[in-house]
Image (cartoon, rainbow, N blue to C red):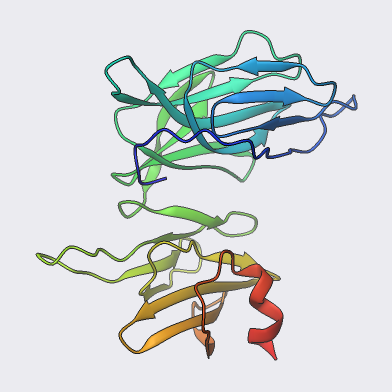
Length: 228
């Protein structure tokens, strides 16, 4: 999430059922959390944009927006019974929240990475490039950062792997890279046209480049036509 604006929509995002029960949680951009019975919890968060399920709880990132329309980045923890949410505040916009090797992490727009230890967010032992998002965190940690569009100092974005050590420059901006079936897909657009690239996760090498006519809403839906 790059724009600090209020978004309230009706789209819900379901998460897996909690262990030991049949309850599941959904949420929307307005900061409302729902369970499978229709019970709701309105968070003290008016702009939510990403979440992850970890240790029988839902962790949601977004903003608390005060009466002066000032945004305060925060993480919220919501339990299965939708009571007593826990909040943590941060200094910079949170770009992503993810799990890796059985730990919970969040990262901010400056590239700082934090991990949750004993109910406190601590600095992790590594950093990301600014504005990075995590696209893969199963067997490896792969992150991507967008190209900068400023005329003063334009620069290409890219994707990189922590355990494999590769770093590939890629000119992506608004369409987030995605990993599908052990391959990374990236949409690029410049004066030459629009293309989707397929990269392998082992070396970060571009395997296929295919032109497309339209800007894709998501990339995994195009993987079959690119792989043909």
